[in-house]
Image (cartoon, rainbow, N blue to C red; front, side, top):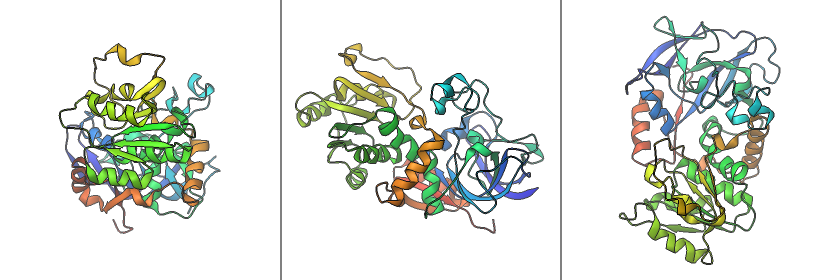
Length: 371
């Protein structure tokens, strides 16, 4: 058993940094020493999942041990942790919808994997404990299925690699895989946090000509320009549904509306906002995963508009992560610039606070070898 530490949520809004024990890998499993873990809103939400869980679903580290039939990584390899684990055999995988695998997806699957790789995989206070999204990266070590690790083949920091595993993939993939942004097109991005910034740079990489960023914070709009926004707008406080800023969008898009619009705020009142921003036959992408009940004016769908709520940027792990690392290596994908601040695991509370108050584009936990 490996003795380590992890951020343990009690399921009712409280977490503590506690001692954990992690077992050795069985067949098809990989033991990873975590070097860096991203912090995002989903981690904050997981504090209230109603059960104990090891926090974290973005991470990168080094392979410590492998089980039988693990051939794509070896001990000592730097790896990215990936929570989308396609089985390759279910209906959705056969359809090419790997991010919503019916067998393995912790979000969309019918039979999700247990949070630990096997019954004695990870224990806390003597009992098995689940890992958030099956990987639980805010811990010094994790034991996962082999499909959850992707070898890192470029020169990149663990901090920058860690955030690729969710926030970057979700934003970039929403623009590239889901919306399929075309060269020369116009794009509106509502909300310029970590995910929104990656939608922006995904649209830039796709060749969009007009990228309009909306946010309430000047600092975030300044970052949006750095990541590829051509125009920035601050909505009025009283413009709750963005109907007024929509008029400005129309002026910038030949009176029609944008070709694509992305909602990246998680604010329920803005769930229909991307429909308002796009032209007839445009595409509205609800990226943030709003799950509340909404009342929507069906006139917003007129005419021939598409409204899509993709999961994880429609990630195909076998293809997308190598593309993202290549884009980083050639300077097109900005990752280091996303990281506003790094923290120790003992400062996780501060990392959450900085995230919730909008101080960070992205905060990252760095782990020291002596934890």
